[in-house]
Structure formats: C-alpha cells, structure tokens
Image (tube, rainbow, N blue to C red; front, side, top):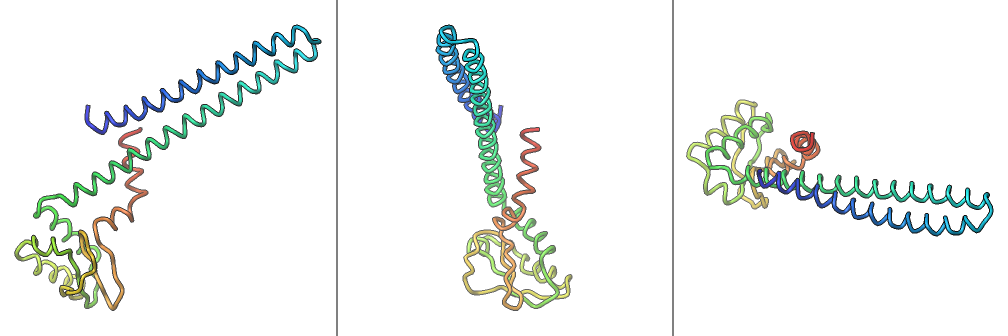
Length: 197
C-alpha cells in the first residue's frame, strides 16, 4: 500500500469514525427523548401521545440528516486535501527532475508560448547556472521557428522555476507554478478520477 493510499485510507477511516460517533450520540439522544416522551404520553391523552411521537420522529430524521451532511462534508474536505497534496507533490517532482528532463520540458513550453515577436526570456539564477550547453541555441531556434527572437533578460524577475517571456512590456508567466495554477481545476479532476472513482 503506497503512502498516498495509506493517507487516503486513514482520512476516510477517521471521517467514518467521526460520523459513527455522531450517529451513536444522536441515537442516544433520540432514545432519551423517546423514553421521556413515552412516559409523558402514557400520562397524557391519546392526542398528545401522537403529537410527541411525530415530533420525535421528526427530530430523529433531522439529526440523522444533519449527521449525514456533516459526514459527507468531512469526506469531501478530506478528498480535497488529498488532491491538493498530490498536486503539490507533482509540482515538487517536476521541479526536482533531472537537468536533462527539466530543460526538455522547458523547451516544449517554449515551443508553445514563444511569439512571432522580439522579446526577452528570464530564468531563475539556479536554472541559469544548471542550463545545459546549447540550450540558448534551442531558445533562439524555438523563437525563430515562430518568426520571432528572444534574448536573455538581465533584471531579476524573481523566477523560481520555468521562465518568464516578455514581449513589448507584456509578461507571459511560464513558470512551473503558473502552469500548475492555470490547470489546477483540470489537474484536480484528473487526480479525483484516478484516486476516487
């Protein structure tokens, strides 16, 4: 069983245990109310007895409904937390890829986002230091393939990973974090499908 499966199992077990405890508590409360109402109904007229039974049934139904809603809410919250953790681990995995794979990914992103204009490209200091030989030529080739050109920007754009393209003062955030954020809903749906269906 993987760490993710253990985490998922633990979250679901905790949600079930909480729900079971609330259901037992509600059943105990309902039993107390039922016992009290039964004693009063024995002393009262038949009409009062019927009214009390109806109120008890209604109360039990509302308590059960409330517990069910709380249970579903807790399970949903747990699933959302698991999905967020999976996406964060995926982001960390992409950022920690070996140099060759990481820059191959950046090259694909550059092919997609380069424009047919003159522009600048900004990398983090760490990525500039580990940039493979010949990658600058790949950047220029990708820009030329689109009918434009790119030169390395000198100022600090506080890039953490990936890169930022600047064309005529307009920035295109192509950091890995920005890509994950842009696709968050789509990625969350994929993770949900993989883990919970």
